[in-house]
Image (cartoon, rainbow, N blue to C red; front, top):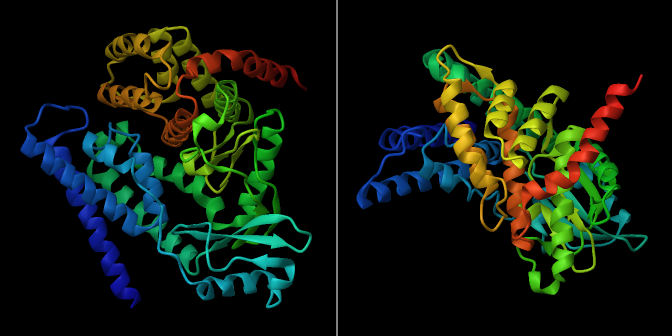
Length: 434
């Protein structure tokens, strides 16, 4: 049975490779070109095939696919767009299948912890875990996240397989790997995902998130109440996902205030805490009228060092000041220049792009798309992008996409300008400390 599962997964990987190669030959990432309707339809079919294969392979591959969706410098544009629709949805397992995980974590008498436990209607079901609503004996409503049986060895094997494939690819395509370090990019993704395999680490991440959110009136993080490697009990987030919320139920001022504080919260993660939520998609942000926004699911976390954080901050500052030349310089400092790099051409690209981005609102411009434009230009001009940009890009793209549902009139650069004094103040305090 194990051998047949491995064979099926190998076939899915071969299917992904076939679709990626075919679509990229018809429409290379750095040479968009025009295609007729027949070619476009065929490209769309290949893109759907790639997405379905990623979904069938499970959580690790879906995370990789989500990162690739922000990297049109690596894959063809139709596939990048289709991978943005990756959803980690899985068939609901019967409670009898996951109940042994609870019993292993808390003992056979685990039910004594709860006044009631809704085993019939999970709050959510993904390929890694299922979440249930329950009430503790003290009357507090909680969410109970239970890891799916057997998922950890599967992901460990998937990581090993992807590392081996990336190593082989790097040896066969050294020029490509010099610009896009696939092995390093996968390493960043794997490091960010590790808390999803151990809920005690996720609980610690939540505590750090709660400390960071303490400075924001309209942003909060659930409180972890108990955790084992495979079960996490946390306070229940009020409201509904920001995607499903009705903006008309909020006052205009409340919508804008929540949106600005969510973006500010993410900025401070990138620039002052240097630890950030790597997957703030709409399903992970809950809102309710008259309540703070709640950022849930702290299983995927990014870490950035001080130098990269400062370079990224200078890049965004350049963007807010409509300075394409300074943005190009900051971007190059975050990455690595290849022997064939054309810095002058990249600087000209940024000088043309930045004026279109500087003052646009979320309704007028997708900042995630703008970031991918920078990535595509960087790769085309022979500048190796920092592997951390893959996780940062995913995080930033999801954050601004989530806020767009509630407050599309907000300008990201305006929010950044408001926060820059606090960020620089934090840098100065750290630099002057003993």
